[in-house]
Amino acid sequence: MRPDPAIDALAERLVAARPQGRTLVTGLTGAVSAGKSTLAAQLADRLSDQGLSVEVISTDGFLKPNAVLAAEGALDLKGWPHTFDTPGMLSTLAAVPSGPVQVPVHSHVTYDIDPALARRIDRPDVLIAEGLNLHLRAETPAPADPLDLLLYLDAEEADLEAWYVARFLGFWEAAEHDPASFYARFRGMDRKAVTDLARQVWAGVNLPNLRQHIARARPVADLVVRKGADHGIAGIDDPRN
Image (cartoon, rainbow, N blue to C red; front, side):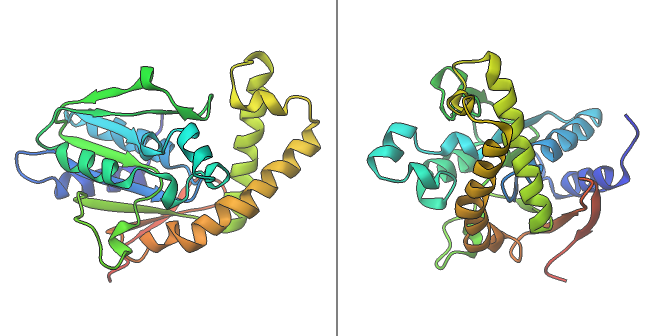
C-alpha cells in the first residue's frame, strides 16, 4: 500500500497529543457511511508501525439492544442520541486509561448487540472510538469529556448519501447467502426497490440525524478531516483557528 501523507499527518497529530504514560482516548465521528471505520483502521496501522499498541472500537456497541429500542418505540431512529446508552459509553471511555474494560459490540449483520462479540480492552497506548453520539462537547451543559482528541470526518451530503446507498446494497447482496443477516428480509425486493428503500432511510433517518446532532461535533472537534467524492482526504482543518 502506498503511503498516504494525509494519514501520516493525522497519525503524527495523535502521537503528539498522547498524554505521557497513559492511553490517548481519541474519538472519530461523522455521518453514517462517511468512512469512519476505514480511517480508524488506517490510523491504527500507521500507529502500530511506530510501535504503539492501538485498539479500535465502535460506539455502535453502546446502542441499546433492539428489544429495548422496540419497547421504547425508537427502533426506526437507531443511531440517534436517545438510542444509545450514553452514560455507559462515557463511563467506559473514561475508564480505558486505567482499564481493563469490557466493550460491547454491535453486529452489522444481525443489526443488534451481540454479547458473544464483546471485547476486553486493557490500556492500549491509543484507543480510537469511532462512530456516532460523540458530539457531546456541544451539549449545554456538556458532560465530563473522556476524549483527549476528537476528529470529525466531513464530506458533502450528496457523497454521503451515495456511499450509504452503496453500503446498503452491499449488505443486501451479501445476505443472499446469509439468512441470519438483517438484510435477508429485503432479498425479495429487486435492486431498484432496495435502492429506493436505502434512499428513504437516508433521507428520513440518517440525514436528519446528521444535521440535527452529528454535525454539532464539527465546530467543537480538535481536527476536521475533509473527504472528497473519491473517498480521499482533501484536507485537515483545525476548526478553532
